[in-house]
Length: 115
Image (cartoon, rainbow, N blue to C red; front, side):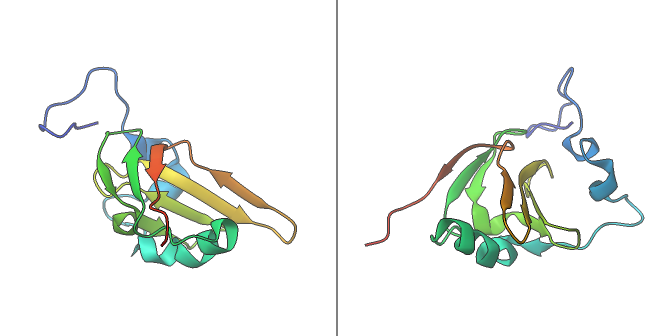
């Protein structure tokens, strides 16, 4: 994994390797959208506008607005990746009776209250 200063971090693994079946390859990248693509599904779950929320990536520590993240929606659910390191921030799968949500790639998500 390359950290922000361009040097390799010792003992750190490339976050793109954690899910090789959804990571794509250099010659065959998986098409992605920005964070707005996840807004509808997350609105249904949280009933808040998550696009302006600020999150911190657990993989690289970068802090960005959720709307800047890369969203992969071609699978059975939604995978949201960090724009900086491509680490998985969020996974959301919806079934007829449940939502399955994994936020383990975020150390926090700051959501402003609506007035």
